[in-house]
Image (cartoon, rainbow, N blue to C red):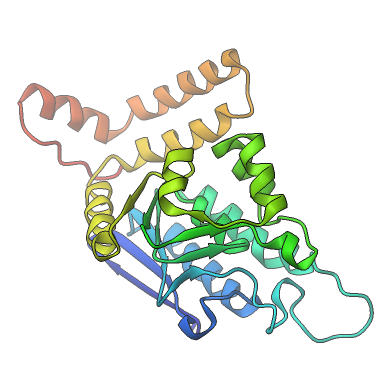
Length: 265
């Protein structure tokens, strides 16, 4: 696929997917989402990238659905509007693909993350934001309801009270407040965002990829399970991780007092 709306590159085990519609604040229509799905599938299927970085160009990470371009409905057509159609066919499948990737996802939030853009931002295993960035659940301002996993993600990150107020009041949540709430990992000076994310990505690209996959899956599984069920998941995951070459290398490196040379398997 030739990309028109995104940039995609891979180097040294790090794949970078950049939403590239700066004039539209990286707003999303179905064409953009199709390209993003293709890029994420490449990361999954080609197996050469060991971490994915998701970011945007210009002043915004992503301003959500492109209302001028049809947004989640795809635009055009006649009859009653189905504002959820594109969610089922495009927006939601992209979110599920990000969660199901066998490699960690880092989101670099360079500016506004609103609506669906907020969901994709928070889908990162590690979320780093510029201090000028902010998060916004803007649906109520146009008479819609939060979507693309917002009602699942936000209460788990910040609790029911803050999530509900954020959704019902439609207020901007600055990056530094998001850190205080436990919504994201870190907020850094704008000038330091790229270097900070690059350092994290390079570290993870050299890390134990299987362990990362089991950690991200285990945490998400545990949120919907009892303690006993979570312990069972941990036990199963530890069996899997303990049979990996990276585990053998990690123990050997520890005993030899040297850095581990993980291969991702």
